[in-house]
Amino acid sequence: MSEQQPESHDDRFDEFDQIVAEESDRDPDLAVIAAGSRTLRAQSGPPQGEPVPDVPADPEVAEALREVEEELAGRWGETKLEPSVTRIAALMDVLGEPQRAYPSIHVTGTNGKTSTARMIESLLNAFELRTGRYTSPHVQSVTERISLDGAPITAERFVETYHDIKPYVEMVDAAEEFRLSFFEVLTGMAYAAFADAPVDAAVVEVGMGGTWDATNVIDGAVAVVTPISLDHTDRLGSTPGEIATEKGGVIKQGATVILAQQPVDAAQVLLKKAVEVDATVAREGMEFGVVSREVAVGGQQLTLRGLGGEYDGIFLPLHGAHMAHNAAVALAAVEAFFGVGADHARVLDADTVRKAFASVTSPGRMEVVRRSPTVVLDAAHNPAGALVTAEAVTEAFGFSRLIGVVGASEGKDARGLFEAFEPIFAEVVITENTSHRAMSADDLAAVAVEVFGSDRVQVEPRLDDALEAAITLAEEEAEYGGAGVLVTGSVITVGEARLLLKRG
Image (tube, rainbow, N blue to C red):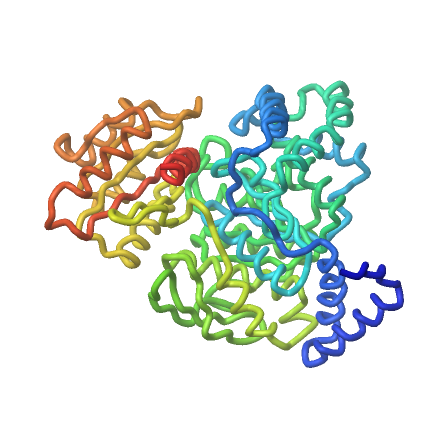
């Protein structure tokens, strides 16, 4: 094989012009953006890796990752907060403000944030932009939280990024009253990794709330608010309106706000905030939305109305009406990012939009991990999330008998969770995950018995035993050939179940 000659600067420039010419039927600004990223992407290759990475095969890398995780775990956890962005702002300052090296789309809300962020990322990737995505919590590996071009960063890169910023983290620790928390350090790592890549755009999901969330040191040109409901009420407020006050903190001066359908009091708060900062608002059901949806094999077929017009023939390989609404929100966010509906009156390329949605994955969200019987994983952890999951399971699968496996975290509305699932669960197996935040199986079972009755509740504290018991119950009688299992209640429970079932 002859040795390939290095590509000259002029050759690359010619390639850039050629790509722009090929895209001439699109808006010229969008074509130039896409072409620039496509020439960059040619050097980095397509996204690599699984959506949920496994333990590194190299023992040295695995050990290095474990050591970093232990150091991070020694900091304040994600449930212990001091409501301020002072420490993360100080870290950004000593790092040289990496979060300002790229435009961002900031995603807040109560339910649907991660799935919506993944859809936004998929759309931006399809339009040849290099992306960074920061989401939480993770399903199996902490490296999932920081993604580049749709794939979690490697364990090696995660470790390198941590050690790169560690001296600066220690500087801030020494200067502040409280050390940086686990989430604050991870946020700093994400912003630094995105600047180092570099990315063309970042998709950032808040950890909790908005105003004082560690992610809120970015100036998101687009702010996305997914449906708001009651969760983290001890920290965010006891009504949707109070919670919206905190979440509205991501809406910045002159931004475009993409609002999913909201409770009336939450919508009022968010609209008022938008007026105060002169932000432009697009509301689901008004400026954009779901025109039609039909259940399809492996997902659903959609027609969406975006800010610039309609997009039909979209296949979304995810189940449930809530996922269709997430898709509409994601599409509007990307249109707004590209200026569609404001600077540009044209729709995005429909084939590219279809390609993007067809490739979306969302591990641990209505995810089928086994057949015969079918086992579905869904990370619903509050009553609102449980209600949409129950509707989605009923619509997509129509099980003749469904067994629930539920492990929840302390402080969650377990009764509300069970009441949402009671109509669809024939029986429920109560368990607990390995997190220190897990609600004990006995305490959770006491609530379950009040909702289901003792004859429909089984307790198996070990998750592997709970999964085996549920699968046995689903297979118990031949007449229940259409039986299934739904594992839910917590992202951690779902992640651990996914690991057990994928390896089983």
